[in-house]
Every structure is written in structure tokens, then in C-alpha cells.
Picture 1 (cartoon, helix red, strand yellow):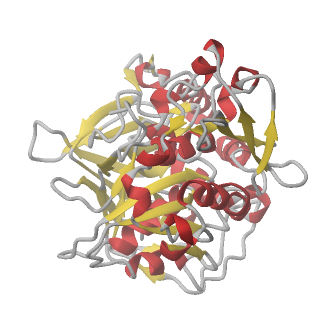
Picture 2 (cartoon, rainbow, N blue to C red):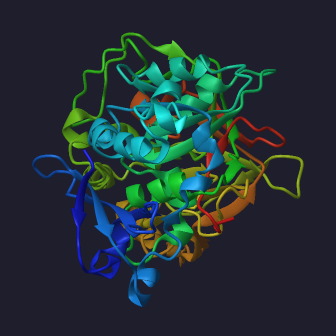
Length: 473
């Protein structure tokens, strides 16, 4: 619930990193009153006790020079609310994303803000019916909720804005629910980062991140309420799979998991021939990491789960038996990628991405820019656990891994491959199903031995639009 505190000092006493926006208070008929309401969000640690969110509204009568500086770019004009907020609003609350904070965020933060900005319909004299009459809320109850929700939007003739309270998995579920060749759907997505990695959101907002700076949720709310209608086409790729590929952990499957090995029993496997993605498609260490960290035991640790699962995988230092072929922008045919490190032409890492960051602090593709529509591949051979960790740490230093080179035991030079592609194909020869998992935006697919995944950049296809911050692109 929003609460108001009136302070004599100005907004300069507040933490700008917590300010969502400010609005000017209307003066009375005699010109008295005025001033500003400043809305702020503070957050506790993900694993802390009690409610992690606190939304506050602070009233100030007047502003001086320092106060104006603090609020620069953060003042919302009541008369210029972004146009997309006056469309049909669909709020999707993903209860399983991240550490399960989405419902609390909706109730404590987003719902009160929508009521403040758009009205709740209680003031009939204003002529506004508020947000409630055109805002529908969908709360996930299963792994298939978002896809079913998206299927209901197919062929929608009017503009629909989906406020997605989830992580990257919610994005891919939405895209694949909307996907139907021959149909177009006018959907604009506003992402509020409540997942674990939040790669799409982090990449879209990367130019706004400082050394510390506002949290992702504060930035997401600023984009939503101060975005000025910046809805851009979301670039996508199409991942296709060989016959016999199945979704792992599909709705209805037995998700019983041995945390020690990551092995799961999939009693109800669902065959899949393709998925639409917007973030990442991978095989090797990244795909195994996403898969094996997705257990109740790991998920309760939030983003820390990746480091915990990574430590176990690095101990095994598995070399993935696969081939990689790519189509570059300058060539119409496949070219085989080879590495000299380790045993034969095995790989530790193959990842195609359309974003720069997999997490806020982890840059996987330093040349990627927000919604530039380019597909880039990062890959390296069988380098062992120690060097894999060294390469991964380069990602936490702004993407230094892409320049890493070394010589193998035979003095042959090798390194981390990084290039722009139109398409890639990974063919997998592993016997053990544990090592035949591929990842598409957090969704895991198991391909049969000798099977493949191709990833192709979609050109001239607009499946949805996404809200982006002002002045980013």
C-alpha cells in the first residue's frame, strides 16, 4: 500500500537510485498547494525475512536547485501518461520465477502505482474508469499458464500491452504462445525483472547501469511509466530440432529430481520441432548449468544457484561430443568450426545470443547492442574445468573472455571463438542423455543421440514489441 510522508526538506534528501518518478501536485483554486509527490521503491535482500518491497510516496511543498537536479528526467506529467498505458493491460504474474517475489511485487508495488497514475475508477467525476476496467491479471498456476494465456491473444485486433512479471522463461513462453505462422498479433511487452538472470531486461537496460545505480525493478518501472511510448520490435530467432527432440520438464511431467546429478524423471515427455527465442540458444556448459540448477534446492538461492551448480559441473569437466557449423553473413553455406584444445574436436561451450548480457554483471556478447537484431556465437573447445572458469570470469569483467587466446600442448593456438552469424547447427553425439540437453531462453530440450539443433535469425518477422528505455536506441 502506498503511504505518504510530508517532509520539510526536499527530494535531495532522498536516494535518487530508489526514486521511480515524481508528479506535480495540483494547486487549489487560489493557487495554494502544489509541490510534488515522489514515489520510491526500496528492496530488501532476496533471501531476507518479511516483505522484500516497500513503496513510499513523499510529499514536498517546493523545490530548490539541488532538488531539481535529483528529479531531473524523473517527473511524470499527469497529462502525458505514455499512450501504451491507455491500452488494454494484461498483467502476468509468474509465481515460480526467481525466488517467488512476483506476486508480492504486484500487490505492494505495481498495482498501487497503476492506481495512482491511471486511477482506480472510484472518482466518477473525473470521467475516468481507472485501470481496473481494462487491466486483467493472470497468475501462473502451472508451467503452461503463460503459453495458454498468449494463445488467447492470437489475432487480437486491438493494441494489447502485456506487463510480464517474470524472468526470461516468461518471455520465451509468451513468444511461443503467440507464435503461429500466418497470424499477426499486436502485442507490446513490458518486462519487469523478477527472474533469476533476467538477460533480456539487463541487456535492454545496460546503457543505464552504473557501477551500482538503481535496481532492475526501479529501472523497469521508470521505463514503464516514463518510457514515452518507446515500443520497439523485439528481434527473434527460430531454433529447430531433429526428430525425437522433447521438452524436458514439460507440463504434466514428473519433475522429481536428484539434486546431486541433475537427472530427472520425465514421465510425460512432449515432442517439439521448434521454439522461438529472443535471448539465447546454447549447448554445453551453459545449457547444463541452466538445467541442473533448476531444482527447488538450488532455486531458493536465487541467482546464486548458477554459481553453486557451476562448481559441481566444473569438477566433472565434461567435454561435450558435438560438431558446430555456422553460416556467416558473408557466406550462404555452412562452415565447420574446429578447436584444437583437449581431446579431439569436442566442446565445452556453444552459445548463440541476441543480447549482450546473461545477467546484469555478466557480459556474454560485448558487441551486442539493444535490439540490434544480430545473432552472435560464443564457443570454445575442450579446455578443462579450470580454464572454463577463467573464461567465464572474463564475462564478469565486461566481456574480456572474447579476446582470450592460448596455445595447447602441441603449441597450436586456440581461443574463444566469437562471431556474428546468420545460422548455426549443433549436432550432438553423446550417449548419456544428461549431456544431450540444449537451452532456448531457459527452456530445456533433449535431443536424441546424433540429433541436432539449428538456430536461425528471423528476418522481417515482428512477433511482438518490447518497451525500451528512453535514449537507449
